[in-house]
Length: 379
Image (cartoon, rainbow, N blue to C red; front, top):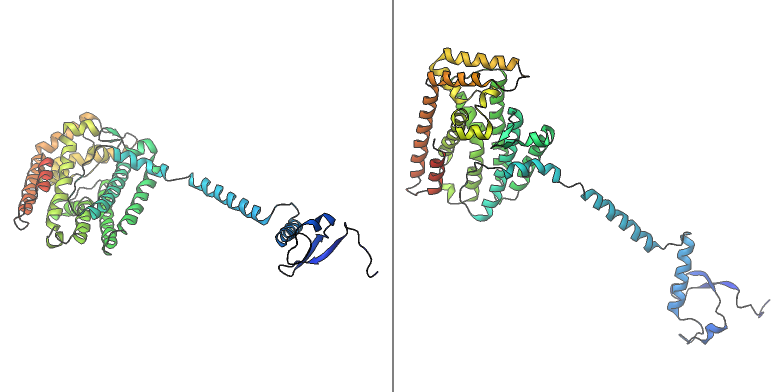
């Protein structure tokens, strides 16, 4: 009835004076009237009333008693834990074979260019060099690299191939950071050339087919396969260096690529240091059609056919990975008797002379670093 007194404990609907919304709250009791007046109204201050009202409304919305802020904080914490779990699976496993092979002795060659470009190009070449080594050793079945186990002997072929592929991706990421926009196109072109050259090397080995020196197909394969790794840094440096842009490096790079590969074919058969690092006369174990064998076919077809016959038998007996030592010693004897080893050494001398002439021909400028590299490779 109008004017009737209500007990202090009675709960009624009141309008929130701050936002005009209504909510459930307790009517102030007598002790609340003792609080200071605000805006001429007895009772709790607006901030206290509003806080009390907000808490009750939240509790009504979330029966479990947790506030929206608490739930939001929990979701953020859960998300952070998930991200941390994902980060546990980093690239350490895929980097394993790469880090291992990079720790082994290397046959690296370099040129001095402006520091920023040098660091990026050196990193690109390192990625590609290590990737090609890992793939080569898997494809060749080589068990040793510079006297230590090859990567796939430790990490397995599958992981090693995966890592090599990853390094090609890393090289693409690095080349995108070079200032010249053409750098990416240069890298992809050289990579395509490299893989084409390797495909012919594998094809001739699988077919046990010895190409003829007169057709120059063996040297074309070398230019693509090995020369590509020499041409890539030279091409990138030409793009990044204004001084190098005036020099024609193509002929020099071709000579150095051929020299490096033919030298490698020769010392694989004859070098004592190479035998200690990779084993005795390793290329015949793989049935590789090396430049020495190509020269043998040109000079003495009969002896070359004997060697190819041994390779064909080895291809049939793939379960026996390595040729007998006596068989390899006989192959070396046939190559020497045919004059193939001397012809190979003669080709190396001609390539060295040509490279040195090119080095002296750069507008009369000496390049002691390149000369030192060529002299170090001399056998």
